[in-house]
Amino acid sequence: MIELIHVSKVFDTKEDQIHAVNDVSLTIQDGEIFGIIGYSGAGKSTLVRMINQLERQSAGDVIIDGRRMQELSQKELNRERQSIGMIFQHFNLLWSRTVRQNIELPLEFAGVGKQERAARAAELIHMVGLDGRENSYPSELSGGQKQRVGIARALANNPRILLSDEATSALDPDTTVQILDLLKHINETLGITIVMITHQMEVVQHICSRMAVMSEGRVVEEGTVQELFEHPRHEITKRFVQNLDDGKDIEELAERLKLKYPDGVLLRATFTRNNTDDAVIAEAIRKVRFPVSIVASSITDSVSGPYGVTYLHLYQGTDPEYNLFVETLVNSSVKVEVL
Amino acid sequence: MLDSSLNLGQLLTAVYETVMMTFVSLAFASVFGLLIGILLYCTQSGGLFPNRLFNRIADMVVNVLRAIPFLILLILLIPLTRAIVGTMLGAQAALPPLIAASTPFFARMCVIAFQEVDKGTIEASKSMGASNGQIIWKVLLPEAMPAIVSGIAVTGISLVGYTAMAGAIGAGGLGNLAYMYGFARRNDAVLYTSTVIIVLIVFAIQWIGDAIVKKIDKR
Image 1 (cartoon, one colour):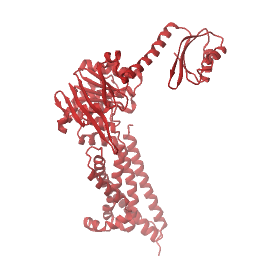
Image 2 (cartoon, one colour; image 1 turned 90 degrees about the vertical axis):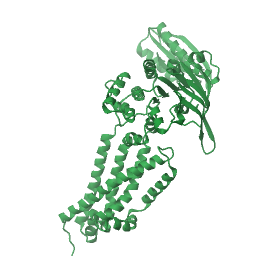
Image 3 (cartoon, helix red, strand yellow; image 1 turned 60 degrees about the horizontal axis):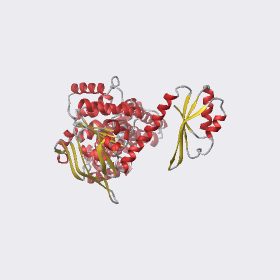
Image 4 (spheres, chains in turn orange, purple; image 1 turned 135 degrees about the horizontal axis):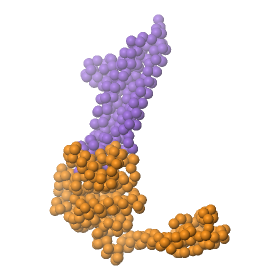
């Protein structure tokens, strides 16, 4: 169990003091995946670093399994850290070491013998799905593969806790899902407690059971993911949930339309302030002979002016004709995506 | 009478002296410079073991030594050289000032090399429970190695130049040969031959350094 009790972190600068973390109390149970979400600068990175004492709190207690972390000697702390793995946004692998050697690094720190190290590394490489890449250098790997090495490295000493500091923020959406599935699998099979720091609601939604929302150094809302999704109370939480719905709606609509219109070509045209007033589509339609139907459309008033999304279905035409149509729209600075 | 012949034995001795002076002092400078570089890097604020007083003093010593022109350092160190080597003539007598001049130079290059190491890898090592010694030995040094090796090459090249200056005031080597025989006795053959050999030594050091860097840099 991880207990943070009234922890604060104050950074002294020349002019004044910055309260990066302000009187936060949280309890994270064994075996759960706990999400801490917040915008950048909310203090979540500082908070997670207090758990393994990479940042010392200015006030309050950090207690892991009944041990007060701030009272440990450096030696005891180093031993304790071996049972708290950590993964990072930018992976933080050593470029001078191969995949296998990177994974063996924490074992070297822990004084594990050479043969045991090799055996454990082989086991971990298989577990994170990097078979065949053990002798590659990080520079030869994709982002997703690098994070797999980071995860294997963090698990090398059989930790009870895994801290994840924006571990998927540098990855594309597909890779993010793969990495999240891997973390979930690790949580389920090894029973490791995972603390996820993120600014992506998708991440929390995908794998966390409970979550806390941070803003300006404070935890503004805490609860199960389901509770917070269904009944967000704080402004920040509402904003996170809102962003997620927008993205989901657009994708869902596209999927539905694709099923409905399997033939021809389906386009998503995004208009901005500059061209919503012009009869752009009408002009493009006039230039071609095949039928074009508007199958869905919406105009939103945003801060930067109205912007509209229109789904067009083209059929009974040939590819060159379709291309001509797309070109006409693009020339009027409409963003066109072929679905 | 002016001598325009090229004495091969004399030339080989000079080459040997230059190479010896360069590589012996480079070896010392590499070890001392690396140690000082590690101390400077680790004691700076936010480092592995911050110590403001030590950092300030060491930094100042390094800067002062680097600021003194080598020719003046040679003269200033004469008493020290006499005390250590027993003489102020010959290639051996050039070693203390050569080491004194190149060590701070290389130490500074090491600090730059360490600063280029991704701070994230050091933080990650701390999160794994590494001690400071382990971080220096297993993370900092290997990750900075290509920059350290090119620093050794650059230091070696500047040492070749220093040996020529030391040679001109009696330390032997190609600098001495070029100055005493080539210039003072107007022997162009000696002057140009010495110059060409010095240039070749510099090229060789650069080439070896580049080759090693290329081999160990996996970025």
